[in-house]
Length: 286
Ligand code: NDP
Image (tube, rainbow, N blue to C red; front, side, top):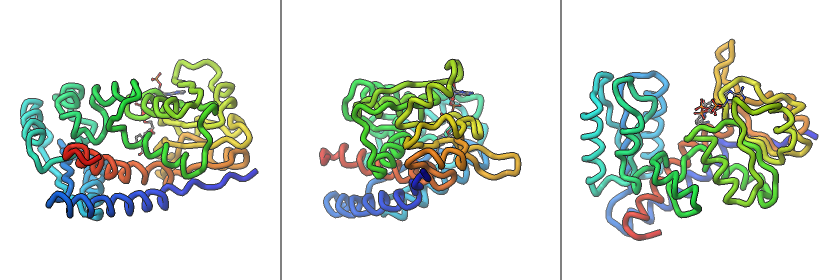
C-alpha cells in the first residue's frame, strides 16, 4: 500500500476561504471586522517569522490583525498590563502571546492573564478544562487543525484505536482529548512509555508530537493506519523533518501528512478560525 498524502497546504487554504466568508458576514453584521492581537516579546528569529505570518494571514481573510512588538527586557508586569488593556478593549476578539517568553517572565502567569473568551491559542486552564469536560471551548490550534485533517481523510474515529505520542499541554494532551471526544480509544504515550513500537503498532490513527527526527519507524505503522506527523525538526542538513520516517511509513499507511506541508499550514488557518469563533461568541452570534 502507498499512503495518500494529506495535503495540509490545500486543506488550510480551504479553511482560510471558509474563514474569509465568515469574516465578511461578521463585518457586515457588526460594523467591524474580528480583531486579532499578537504579542511578541523579544527578537527570537523563528518567533518573529511566526508572528508576522499570523498578522499577514489575519489581514488576508479581512480581519483587523495587529502585531505588538515588545523589547526583550520587558518585565512581567509590563506584559500583564498590556494583556489587561487588550482584555478590556472591545475591538479585540483574540489575544495570542507568542511563546517562548524571555526568562524573566513566567509563562503560566501570562497565559492565565488572558481573558479565556479571547484565548485563541486555547492555552488558558479554563479552556483546557472546558475541553476536558466536553464543553464548548477555544481549542489549541495544532490539535484542532489535525482533527480537520483526519476529517478530510474520511477517518472513522468512533471505536478506532488512536495513539498520540507526546503529552504537551499545547499538542499531545488536547489532541488526546479531541480524539476521545470523537469516541476513539486513546493511548497517550510519552518518553517513559515502554516499548513504544508495540504501542504504535496498535494504532489505526497515529499522531506523533514529539520533536525527535524519525523517532517513529516504518515498521511501527499498522497497515492502513492514518498518520499525522506534528513534529517540526531541523535535520542535520538543515531541512525540515517530521517525527515519522515518512518514506518507510508511506508504504504501510493509508494516509500520511508530509513535513513540511502537513500539520504546519493548518495551525495558522485554525488560529484564524478560532479568532472568528471568539468574535462570534463575544457578540452572542454563535
Ligand atoms: P514538547 O517538547 O513540549 O513535548 C514533547 C513530548 O514528547 C513530551 O511529552 C515528551 O515526553 C515526548 N517525548 C520526548 N521524547 C520521547 C521519546 N523518545 N519517546 C516518546 N515520547 C517522547 O513538544 P511540543 O508538544 O511543543 O511539540 C512537539 C513537536 O511538534 C515539536 O517538533 C514541535 O516543533 C512540533 N510542533 C509543531 C507545530 C505545528 O504547527 N506543526 C505546533 C507545535 C509544535 P515527556 O512528557 O515524558 O517528556
